[in-house]
Amino acid sequence: MNAAKALALPAALLVLAEIGARAAGPSDSIAPPTQVAAAFVGALADGSLIAATRDTLASAFGGLAIGASLGLVLGIVLGSLRALDRLMELALELLRPIPSVAVIPIALVALGFGYRLEIVIVSVACFWPLLILARAAVGGVEPRLIEVARALRLSPLQRTIKIVAPAALPRIFIAFRLAAGISLIVAVTVEIAVNPQGLGYEVMTAGQALRPELMLAYLAWIGIVGFALNAALIFAQNRLFGEAGRIEAPR
Amino acid sequence: MTAVWWRIAGVLVVAALIALWGEIAALKLVSPVFLPTPARVWFALVNGFGRADLAEKLLGTVGHMMGGWAVASVAGVGLGALVGSSKAARDYVGPTLEFLRPLPASAVIPVAIAMFGLTPRMALGVIGFGSIWPVLLATMHGFAAVEPRLGEVARALRMSRWQTIAKVSLPSATPDILAGLRLGLTVSLILAVVCEMIAGLDGLGQWVLLAARSYKSADIFAGVALLGAIGVVANAMLSLIEARALRWRTSSGS
Image (cartoon, rainbow over all chains, first blue to last red; front, top):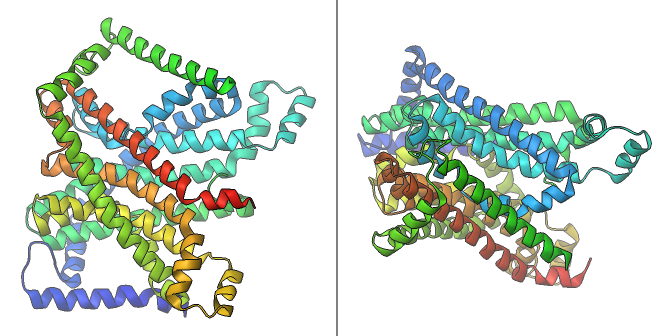
């Protein structure tokens, strides 16, 4: 019953789009869903869709791995050392509002086009959520657990690995999920703005070639990839952390 | 008192980082082609505001950002209130919105270009589309999560549907809506920059990309610094609004 309700609106929209697009005749920006589906099958068959998806995901995941690890390490350090955190606070407050896409020109001059440009921008974008949320998660670890660590005379490194990290892990995973979503968005954005590779570039060239059906097919595919990535991460979160993973935003 | 000292220490750290940057740039540890000295960036800023049209670009970006954000905020709160306050609407519309949400807003830029061309209207459409999601979903959540007993009170007082929305649901959903508006503002700044880069619209996005094409690294850094400043100011503005709008909450003390 719920699935039927969920599908009613998209189905109605698709039918309307089909009728509307056919009635309006040929256009540069709209195509009937059946033609979009045909274009999708075409791009899938000639391999261009798969190659573009591979390029985009490689850059997104590469940047995610680098940016998330750096943010995680710095977040844990700042979350454990209160004094250092307060010293760095202003510097981070000034750097954080810089939009990640503003780094594009700097990276473009330094690196030129290609994977490295995209990976750098994605890592900048993924660095912040991990830093902020890992810092909050580590800072918010139950104080009694820290007392236990002290009573057991654990070294700071042992304390971080054995007590702090496991306690903060569910919230850190939420940050990772957020960053994974951001990585795909930023990768596609960089491709649309400057970088001539991947899914973003394919949407752009299809639009410029006045092939709306191919453009919309790629757009829909980007939506499906984003949705699948998000769904996979939510599944992993529930699987790995169960109830503990359902704590949402940090308090 | 100690808070003031920490603030001063923070300023000193920022000064030290800038000095370190200057030292690295002066020693040419990183090629000056892409790492200018702080002095050159400062000169580029002064020069940009004095002789070039940097002020105009700054206003252009702020205009694109605020225009798109305003459209998205009004539409997002309105739609979110409509969908969020009805269980049936949530069942029908919610899943579609959840499916569309992870879609990168920048991916609709080519579609918007095909519809509107390389015009400010294209930018308005893209920025509005991109920043409506956080506002819409947060508002829906806020309206759906209204304490049920408050709904019963409204019914007992025989309030009409509109009165219920205005006097009960909206105030109760305000914290969620404000959180959504803040996220939407961040998204709109990013999309404004991207649209300016692609469509060559007057703004800082176009300015930094042109500077990159002519390898003027000081101009790039000046533009990036201004974009950061826009972000800082926009956030501070929203914090101010938040503090005023939620004053009743803190004073009631739950």
